Amino acid sequence: MQKLTITRPDDWHLHLRDGEALKAVLPHSARQFARAIVMPNLKPPIRSVADAAAYRDRILAAIPAGEKFEPLMTLYLTDNTNPEEIIAAKASKFVKAVKYYPAGATTNSDLGVTDIRKCDRIFATMQQEDMPLLLHGEVTNTEVDVFDREKVFIEKHLMPLISRFPKLRIVLEHITTSDAVQFVLNANSKIAATITPQHLLFSRNALFKGGLRPHFYCLPILKREKHRLALLQAATSGNPKFFLGTDSAPHGRHTKETSCGCAGCYSALHALELYAEAFESVNALDQLEGFASFYGPDFYQLPRNPDQVTLTKKTWRIPDEVPFTDVGLVPLRSGEEMTWQRI
Ligand code: NCD
Ligand code: ZN
Image (cartoon, rainbow, N blue to C red; front, side, top):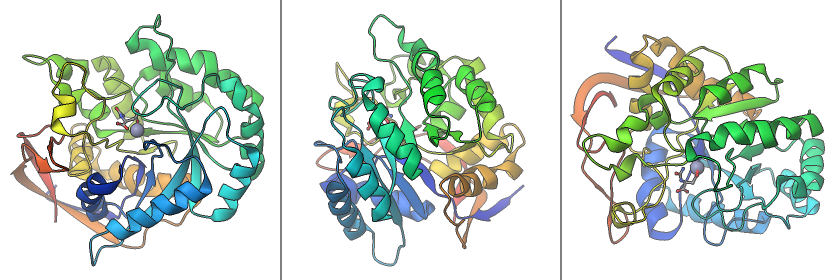
């Protein structure tokens, strides 16, 4: 295949940051995606509908002239979130989901939830309001091996949560293991998952190829090859429970290339091309449109996009760095060649 035209995709998990960083990265997402679920883990986080409205305005102001892009906002759940905030969020129409970060799990999660059971009152309201819950599905106990944190979260927290709230719509975000795939496949129709390009393309070997590779470090961390293959199988299976969410998470070069580097891969520049390569590797390009453009809006009960995007078979080199703030930003797989290009 030399050319692939699909319905314009959306990104169902994206970090846009704020200020100068937002202005630097937003054009990359807007070029490929019509809409994105925007993560609320700013400093301070987006905890109220008023915070989300102001952040949404800043995003809209940063869209390049002539481009269209719709930010779908989320609220950051804390131990102190009020049920009234959920009702106001639903009424706002522009807040589309609520994000659960276990306190300490990842970037800017220190104000996250300390014990998931503390949020049962909120989950009850969300279930009632049909407000989706987005989960960073990892436990934070330091005694649990970092490669097992997703699996343990599913067993210890997610299964009991679903028993308590069987009608709550949940997205298990950026899944990384065959355990998560199996869980989602067996779960009820309210449960879906997003999958990133890096987890479809790389196993944990990428972190150590010829030396330590900080630009492949994200959370949840890359896993064994058998898990990558299970994710690839799920993403290309045509099952609408699995859809696109890049988790593109920009961090300036110096905060990644340091003695204690930040977690996050930057893929907004070339996300669709990365997914196309992953799908092509198992001869499943015909499944890309469903994964990238149909199942996400279907889950969120939004219309599918009316326009299209085209990828052509063309080799190009991913830049070593793109402009960011006062420092550069290193895209995922920088310096390497891609075989698909968005035109
Ligand atoms: C994200 C970030 O940098 O905000 N990092 C990451 O590794 N994915 C946070 C997150 O989604 O865990
Ligand atoms: Zn994320």
